[in-house]
Image 1 (cartoon, rainbow over the protein chains, first blue to last red):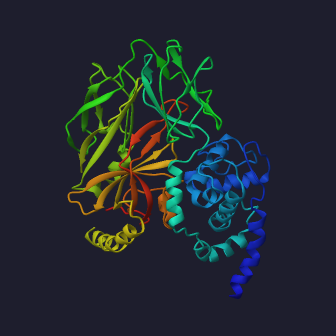
Image 2 (cartoon, chains in turn blue, green):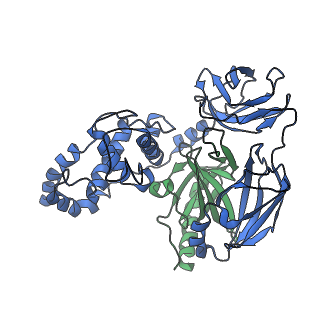
Image 3 (spheres, each protein chain N blue to C red):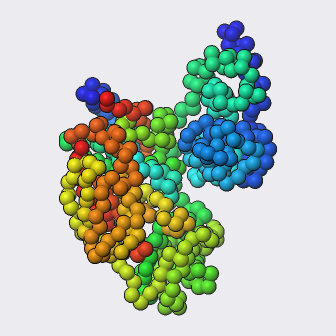
Length: 354
Length: 132
């Protein structure tokens, strides 16, 4: 007991001296930003960079774009503690009160205990003391038990009316009169304006659920390729970096469809290849999205078939490492194809056996 | 492996009926995490499970989305924020949902991957295991 008390007194100045006390955000410049970066770098998931400025050992006092992204990852990871209590459901990148509290608890419990702060901040004698108490310090984790209120919140969140967010679109190439569905959130019952580039716009019919907008492409918008964005009282979805992904043309390409995948069941191996048959495949730039990762930029010589080795999926090697755990199992894999005409609306599927 | 399966089935038998009573409209699920894909556009995870509850043999898979801000992680939060293939999970889900992943040009609309459901709440073993 005496030793614990003594250690507590010894630890207190260390923890407080390395604590984050100010609200930090993009552009902040002070020593606390460095503490922030050290804590973020202590977790591979929130690491600012693996090499160069911001990487472990090269932390600085400048809060730049990489730090902002790392803070957002941190907030996503600990959303139940740093975002939800304030009624926020998306990461902000701003190190406010709750985020500081969580960062500081990690600072005290993990980073210091791991001895990852510079020697100038943690004297060796104190590091030794910390190592004695680290096992008990790390046990003070926060628990979170769901209640009925959480169920209510869950239902509400599905239909929440937030600032407009443009997530996906049903077609990328259309002709006048075609009906297009935009998915997102924050759409209002009236007055959602759909912009086509910066020159043309139309008022879309209201959204019933706040998450979908359906509109027919009006004749008043000339043929061409546009960056489509939405504006309403809640704000705008405009992104200057977006490409002109939406094309109005008299002869639109059909969205890709999958009619068959051969073989329907395949043994998992680096030599296995599946052949996807369907319509609307492009010469180049067909990408497959699936639970086993992405296979990007695949060609289709005839526009009807795509041949893809399992080894070209991005998660193949990690699955290969753990494949022994699934011996005897058959796992259904759904796939979606994306190209410049759009996405498959009905996924295809095949079975991988292990 | 058999021992783990036995423990898992016993825990399922005790916990899942409790979950059913508490949440009538969210069907239960339980199984082994097989594949995990980050939903880079919607900040969640697209998790494919080898489903063991309801009892299925041979295993079948079910893909569910863990969506921060919607799904509720049980106290084993550490696991749920970085799902690990080969760990085990129990929970309930709401049918329907999708994982949105970033398009080749990140500023363009996202690519939706349909899922069997969205996790309502879940807890998990931690960490996963790897057979020798």
